Length: 411
View 1 (spheres, rainbow, N blue to C red):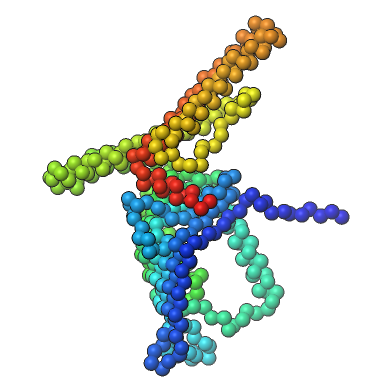
View 2 (view 1 turned 30 degrees about the vertical axis):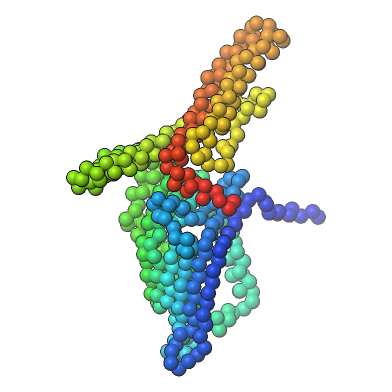
């Protein structure tokens, strides 16, 4: 009997990449003069998590947020830096006869992180690890009792320094039934989040056993702090509201902040005004680019691309445009593509109909092609304008261009 074999889809995966791993561990022999056991210093120059689940091309869902203007990076810093000092307990055996684990003090420092989360990718990774966990639990149960000799690391203190996150989140579907049952996290799947900046506050945990307990406690405190102090950002950075909040931030940078920071000094006022003007122009260009890109996508979704020249829209170039000149080639191609589709619908097809069915068939074909003849050039022009505005924004703010290039590096 033929059995159906489940084959892994090799086109859907996620990967974890490390680069520049530096590890130093100094171990000390037992001595009556001290209890020191070891000192560990770990540094990772680059680290990212990429996925090929939400898109045909790899997407860096977690990596470094590179922006030399907002937070310049020291070349000696790693994206992950862990230092841990371990010492032996004063009493090796407890009162009930159990071995005491070594006691550690650890500090963890993270550079600012850039996140591009897609709901389908997040669910895929959750299912992957939950399946592995269930499998390992079953093996442990089949193998009998766990080995009592395995002792978790005991952390006297585990300190994590503040870290910034810049998050984009693309939901796929909101589970209404789960929301009705009290799972209010599902409200995040209502609309996309764009460029939401969160600050993970400094956390210090005490008297925890095992790495799992440390990270669970850390995640709980971060979530609690975000809900208490930064919950409003989930509203202001939601896709429909982000357009207005972004322009509002630009106006504040242009008008309010120069007045507040100048303190009556004309030179400081001019300096703040120039920075505010640059910030407002950048936010206006970015907002306009998003609006025109959305308009182009909506127009494209209503166009039947049946032209013999295969004029259906193609993805944007993988390289980020450095200035408006870099965007000119793709912008011209988008305009020509729209005009070519309009010409095919309003000229080429009616000419064919005229040869087969006469003037009546040509007239009917021309009338049917009028919507496409209007929408196709508008779609091409909107896409061209959107991509050109991105080039202008990158010319005005090279730091944002480098940030986007960093999100593609290593893929």
